[in-house]
Length: 542
Ligand code: ABU
Image 1 (cartoon, protein in one colour):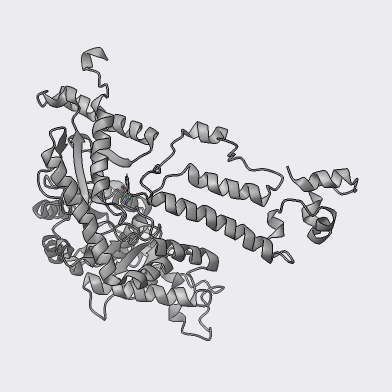
Image 2 (cartoon, protein in one colour):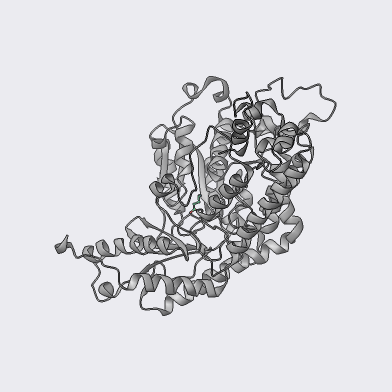
């Protein structure tokens, strides 16, 4: 409860406690009660709010710094797991409920600390759960600055510096993809799914510009193609854009998760024979689970011969373009008409940071612009081609570029290259270790192409069982059971999933530059020790 309320009551003033804030009478109150605990209304823009604001931020920075340091400390937990009902009920006074009366600043700082305490330290060297991980200190500084600037990416007039930074970053990324000086456009958008959505939107507009005004009724039945291992956002895009997820043809992959070009070609021919109109192919550079790279040149040849838009979803694999050693895996990407590339994955930029790169200049604007006169006035006193907001499907747009720009300044392209190389070295180390161990089984016998390593832990009770449905049924239960225990203990975190005919297996991914080979070794020991005694019941016991 607010100390002020008591003071008002004790001093018998005829003012309701909540009216204190509304009156804005901070100076008067301080005279009455010099000891009271400050509230948010004591911060800027309150008169003489500078000192309180400084102290508040200093305390906040201490909390954030302590979290950052703990995130890198191996002795600290990756997570302090609680079930949703426990968090909702309130832990050690940490209440998620929203009050009617203001909380004081001290309490708000405790809330900040608790919010971090019960979250997941995705920057911890033993967090292997997601494609985006790590805690880049410069990136974090960039994010803080971005929030401080609190501006909008729609016009040059409110974001002059950030708009130019976006232009420079996009140009650099296009150059790295291999497009010429004359080619290339793009925007940063909220994640890879949105970037992929842009690609389908632009492809459809490129072939059928009337869709912008007439809608899908003016169009024939459109078909797009993507591989069985591609990201689900391609189907989602078709659903969102009114094309329909059933009009996405899922092309078969080989055992390593790569699209089979001959299957693509025959699917295109079949669709045409059925009277449909193929217009778009998504090739993936770095699939989500296996980390597979589709054969881009072979797919580009097919797209060229059938006149189809080629999009490359390099959300995950795009980072490898920064490495002279590994960029060969994306050979042919320069032939794409559009590319998704998420620096918040392999390049370690704080979330979110995703770009859609488009080869044909002007298409984004033609496709999306609505010319709102209150925002995009054409008679402004500067070059309004820098008002890039109308290229997007959003109005307000977050500044996602500054942190990446600052990181690039701090590391140089070479810094990113060594970061990427290191992640792939960790993957190779894990692969080598797994090969040597009888208690683990690799999903693939061949060296990983990306930093994804997929494997099963085989508990003692399954080691001598012959392959077949009963072994598969039991093996399917192993990874979720181990993960549950791992999350309760909180010392590491790794993902699992089934895929196709493969029962639940672990997927370890490396994108965190803080991870060392000792962390990889730790992970294996942790899985083995958690899994050694797990109880998997035989079918007959169920
Ligand atoms: N494209 C979403 C990333 C999924 C993951 O982190 O596993």
